[in-house]
Length: 429
Ligand code: ATP
Ligand code: MG
Image 1: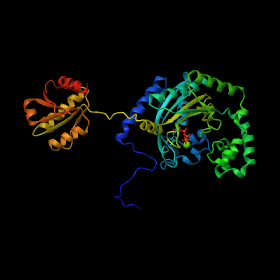
Image 2: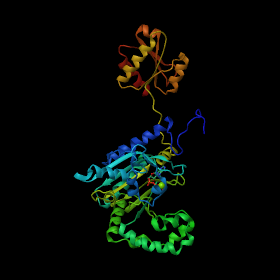
Image 3: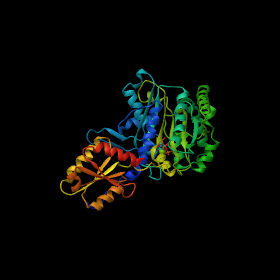
Image 4: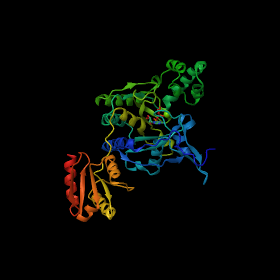
């Protein structure tokens, strides 16, 4: 037992983002959200907690997420089985069904926020992590698959990122996968001696995932397995051709990866991942695909769906490595005061300037003139506004330019807004 006075720490794999990094996070968020809106996507917000059954049904029992990564519990107050969301698509589809969002036609939606998975924490892999997701509901054609992919291709340079490559696969329809599956299982059974425990367990519950194994022995068996591509019919092939054509027309390069199956069961036809080599093992920054069966699987009227989710921690880490961190925000002014009657004078001055639209930081915690001046410098403010007994008596304020040493002048309290704005403009120029 730790003593009651021992310092408490954050949960493993759940990160504080400190002010020094929040500027980058916020600029990342602003760019991504503006980009989503520009492409016609509208924001939606779903709860962080859902019925556990939603994720079991949507993601599939034999997946990493449902088998071992979900934060689930029974609510002690009413015995509901609940789960912290591990991803957003299931909730988004649930919300679309629940609120009949498709009654007047297809929808383009986006959301952002934290997701929760009980994984082994390491660089780029956390237990609480943030995603932005985009989903298109109600459109069956490859044009929206292409739209989602091309929009990502256009985002990376906006974020200042290079070297993010696209991998693409066509995993066909559920029927085509089940025909392939029968032959795949036969092949895996014939080479069972070379499979590891994970692959043996998956062999019957989710054999496609065995193809994605990182174990070299298993990979060797996988390489000899009958390829899924051989089982795809005309409709699936035509969809994929349509997608590839639009990608080529847009000049977006891709690599076909027949092993790409993704970790969630609901996908069909198109699956894709955006990958970088600059982050080590956790190189996938965005993943997505089509999920035409999910609406029906969750009890809704059948409707096609396609979307992606991007991992914010990985993208922000890339931005940081690229040196695209924005400059720390600079207040317009730092107000300091000393002497009889100066607090109230300074306090109302700061209030008035904020009312005129300026960012103003008020000295807090008292201190000598010298220490207040130090804080003013450290705040990064453009100007220091100094209020002493002398200024109060004269109905004035001393203004000091913090960005060029020494320069100081007085302005009248009565017309402070106009004079302050004029000085600020000159200093910033
Ligand atoms: P990975 O193969 O890296 O485990 P995934 O296929 O499980 O990823 P998705 O469910 O497709 O991931 O989620 C989309 C994106 O969210 C990933 O590409 C990744 O950038 C990010 N992501 C997923 N899990 C985590 C995590 N535990 N920590 C940080 N980011 C994550
Ligand atoms: Mg994963």
